[in-house]
Length: 127
Image (tube, rainbow, N blue to C red; front, side, top):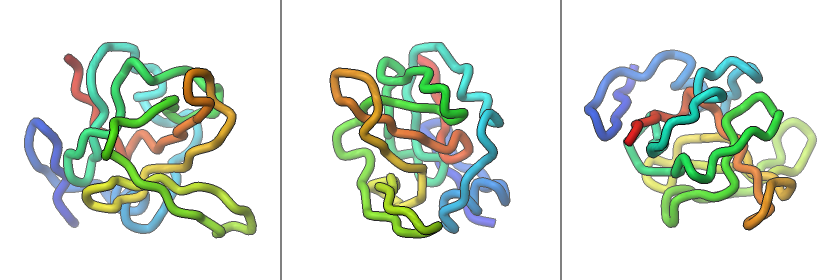
């Protein structure tokens, strides 16, 4: 098992986190407690602690996964994902390259983007 690092320290990744971050897995829709998180704070990569999203950009997309309309500058990178017979834009941590989810062009203003993230790939730290 590998280590998970966040601003509050390091600990082991769960098998589910390893599957998502390292094997491009996906958690079940609606399963993340972060879907209901409303407090102000920052969302970090569960694999390395990189800051990824601010709570102000989180919104309820109805997708079943935590969703954001913008990322912290330099926090994430994207690549084209052609797995599963479709073309999507994969989002990964700019620091450790761990898989986070996908971004779609159907989000709200001001960006029009929907960063659809796996909650297990994120570590929320309230302000």
